Image 1 (cartoon, helix red, strand yellow):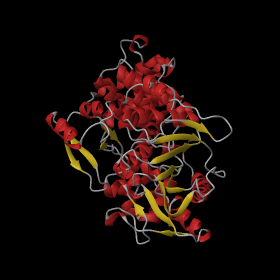
Image 2 (tube, one colour):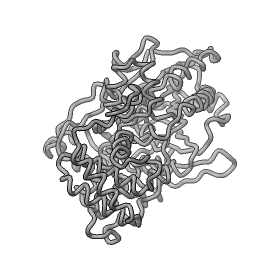
Image 3 (tube, one colour):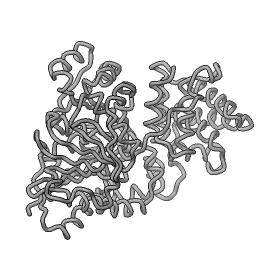
Image 4 (cartoon, helix red, strand yellow):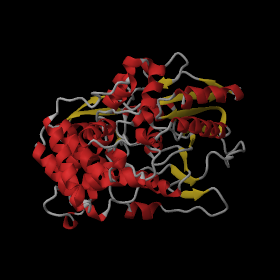
Length: 500
């Protein structure tokens, strides 16, 4: 056993573990930034993040935030990946924190900010250059939401940013709009909007279609609470890597450094950071002593109920959060095959295993929506996980850009893909084995709907009682978590057993 990345064809196994372990950098802040595990890693942050290429008169934090938002807007890049890359820049810890706050805040409150920009500029945001719009959003977010930032700094820095972006002709507009906004902080973004549904969408800064879907599913009151929770920053949760250290050692070290923690009520063996210096937690993660992952996300591996000696298949494994958790739950003594469609994403998974000291994982690049190579009795698995690609609507706290990219049609398309993946996964489960299907989506079409469609055709599988707190289990024996109810990402999971 050991690390490998294979392709599902006649090519020989590619053994890369030692080279990865030697060359992959230590754990970055990406490991403590919760983001959708469906996202492919973006390239490193652009050169403009490096202070020697910035104009000294512009705040490094705001310059970095501007460049990240520009890439998110123009390239559909993922903000969390670019934010994590700031750890490799020369920015100070304080500047990295401010850049992250501005980026995520602007993305969370985008619809509200745009409504105010249109009001004060008297023009549609669609008519503004991207760089001008980003500078305005940044300045307005700081004026509205960051009480410690002087309004003059928010205005002046935004003006400098449009000049740096070579749209200096828009500097007077940016200056005028933001100064007007600074004088009217008591106004609501939804003022003057006659349509109550549109007004609420602007006030909560969520797409109208999304709020309407959730209102039908959860009711108006819960939808508002959910949207407000999405617009807040997620906490930090972690598990302890017993292959490298002990629970007592880690907890004692964190406590002595001023970090306060509590035990999770969602997932056994998970701890939640309540306060203290974040850098201490980051350092422990970089050292491979802990792994930072949302509480609900950690519950998924627990539901699989793994044991040492099990043959385990993780079909949508990259970047490896759940794979590595499965390995640790099985005491690194199981035979684990971790699959993903993209070879380059498996590189990240292998690196994570190396950092944590895990040796029980083999990585295999394949398309899990096609027939799997595990068809004979010898190849079947005791446990199979399908943590399916999904809309990610349960992770908007950390991935706010998702809500501006999704469309209603995406959900139906994803549900069809998820059903194909679940059917393929079922073919690899041994009799008496268990299959867990999970998503980080809140949408019933991707969750209950997929499982029910599967069970209509697969009479050899039954739903089993999940190993989860009772208040997370629905009447149908599915597991559900919500940001506004549980303070976690929104996850769905179903545990199924093959009976014949």
